[in-house]
Amino acid sequence: MNNCLGEYDERVFEILGVAEAGAFFPPIRKSTDIVGFVNEEAARQTGLSVGTAVVAGFFDAAASFVGAGVYDDGACGVISGTWGINASVQSQKPQNQKFLQCVNYIDGSKYLYIESAPTSSVNLEFLLQNVFPHIGYKEADEIVSTFSADAVGLIYRPYIYNADKGNGAFLNLTHEDNYKTMIRALYEGVAFGHKKQLEALTESGVSIDKIVFMGGATNSDVWCQIFADVLAYPLCVPDIKNTGMLGNVMAAVVATSEYADIAEACHALAPRYQTYLPNTDNINAYQTKYKKFLTGRV
Image (cartoon, rainbow, N blue to C red; front, top):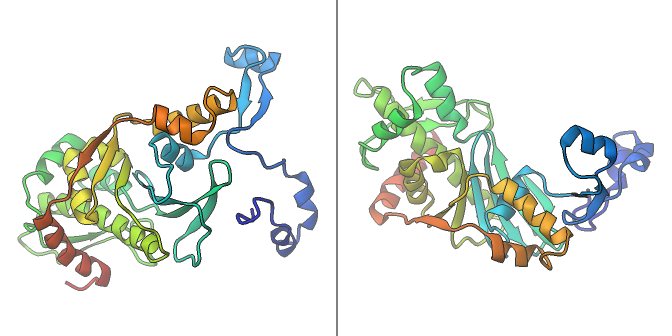
């Protein structure tokens, strides 16, 4: 895609030595376009009614952001799941691209600036399954909640999938540490990873007022508060878990003319939020740790 033109970029096919392949790609459609209808065979296989409209819809991350109400310029969404996905909505194409990816958003009138990597809450899954298999997620939360922001000197780098030209690591491990401090450090380290990713966006001119927070980490109140304190922004958590499904529902109701556009659908159907406000004292404690996280020197 040439995101500036909203068209396929023929130069890419030529560079790859398959110039003729461009002719086989389907037409580019808006997320709210009807692209077909359920036929009899599909109806038999799915139970849907013959003639039901099929809408183009959004890819997974974009659907999650739309469903969470991340629509207006400058709105920022963060997903903490297998991947840490951080995105901001902008009307202007980027003047520089210090972040990973820029895609057309919604109907092509906006852009989604995205910085992402497999560095998020998948780290906790890895640690509990492979190192501390006797501990469950609920117990991990309880352990983490017993520590204050400045209580643990251990630093965790969440790069177990080599996503930062290095590997995952616990830094500053001493004889005073144990499985409890390691789990607490992991919660903080995942949030530090997101902070670094968000800084790649702000360095490209993105301004952030608040963050809409989604993904597996939202199941933990203590982790949500750690994120708010580390990122130093109010954190708004939607009251529904599957915002991706809601995002594609929004595309469908616009396609069938129940709402005029995605903006109207977002304002009408967006979820309510639980807000986590950052604690000033904790912000300062985490800023000191974050500097050590970045340098790897403790």
